[in-house]
Image 1 (tube, rainbow, N blue to C red):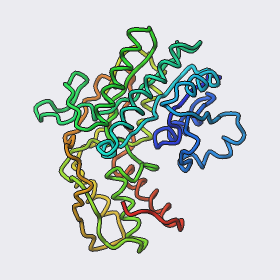
Image 2 (cartoon, rainbow, N blue to C red):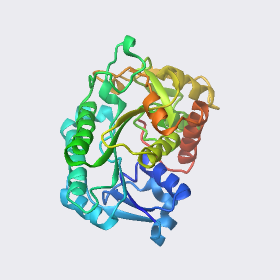
Image 3 (cartoon, rainbow, N blue to C red):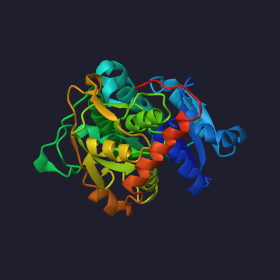
Length: 336
């Protein structure tokens, strides 16, 4: 039985990756999280976690190197998925320092803890982001790995640092580190600060009579290529288990592209509510938007054989039903 360390196990991706590994491997999973993290995304795993045979939680913080050293000592990993960090671009305009510390210093701490341990030779996934490419000219679409970067937010800048750190540690210290630039990926458990998830949440609240029939939106003209989070975590697993190549970096994403407005209209069309009004909320607009996010995933597909399998429509309906279930549970939610 191999051991795996997942930083950010309570996030959308971390929790779905844990589900995937429990179903498809016999690995022992160590999940790194902060003591005060919201555990909602892994509540369905409570029995497994309480039993302690397959999933163990390890507490710490990305900005505390000593806690990461301890996490590596405890988990003894053969595989590492570094998913934790500040993941919301809009918040980075308000809290740029926190974003840089969590993502750049945090990633450095993860790699330092591994580099100086007995587990330096683990297969390591460093999670960058498609946001590093920023505002890409139309003539450079679809975006391949060699596209120049032009980050459009402090979050994107921090992910440029993460991207470079992964490749640096691979080259400088001979560590088996692969870096991914995942494009938009979503599905159940997606945070309500992201556009498609806040649309689904607001629709569920309107259907339940909690919110007036008005949906508040930001920039609807951005193009997005959507992948399902369950396809994304399968890609991450394949990254570390199919001919892992130190220092390589890959664009990964779905195959369905549309505008944010198209996604909004699809979700509205799936709603039982009628006469929904769409209102632009200036507070939801970024100072600069990465508005053409269309990936070329040829390199990763050729290397691993991965391809997305879950249709866009299924992803969005699962997301909407996820929010319906949460809203109908009787809990109270902020309108955001």
